[in-house]
Image (cartoon, rainbow, N blue to C red; front, side, top):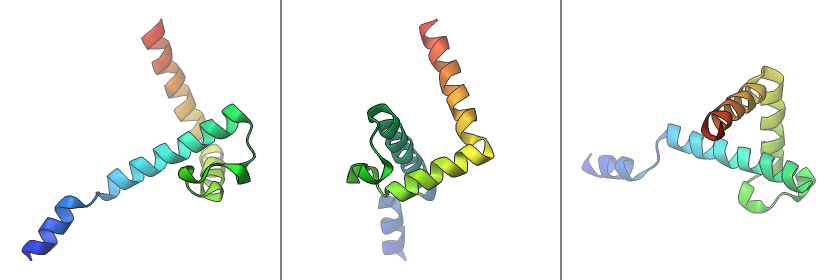
Length: 81
């Protein structure tokens, strides 16, 4: 039982993995639109191009992408304005 706790203490929580995954997808989307790279040509360090593309489509359909862009623009304006 002590080994299980030690293993769990060193592993990422589900929330940490999800947050890192979201950041990786957002970085992939930003890279794609910043460089004009086709989805299929995204560098491997961004993970699956299909995953990033599908996540963007899902976020765009349910309004998450627009909400996050609005929040980011608002926060950016507060910092610079």
